[in-house]
Length: 167
Image (cartoon, rainbow, N blue to C red; front, top):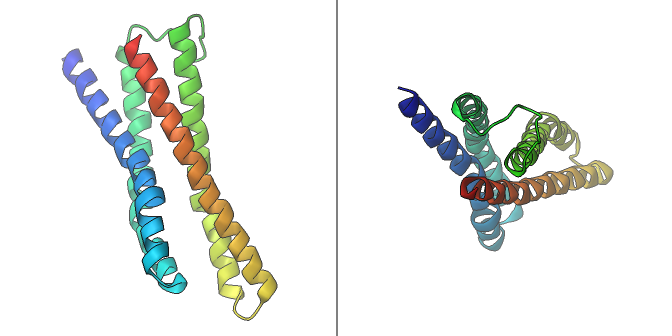
């Protein structure tokens, strides 16, 4: 039974990771460049808003699945020495990987809960106000830069996961 629980936990943990990091990859490297090349800015904004509305719940669910399955995996794995125990290379690497994931989660929810609502409020007020339009553009750029940071962090998480799997 333990093997089944551990195997399913690994499967869902990896599947959730693919959804979240793969989704970021698709948005940054496929959808956004294609939209910029072929759509007018106002149409592109609408498309990206729609994509965000569909992807965010998937990313949120993926984060929840990763946390839950991560706890299950930690419970069943014998190598894991403790939550903040860094007595050996493997546990130190795991702790660093989890710190990167925590940072990704913070960035994700900051963008979704704080930055997006601020952009929405300012966008509603920005009609005819160049200074507010400039603020909205700045916040949108910050939001995109945070997505790029999360992508780089996600790649690093995958790299450390590969390292952990090899040890």
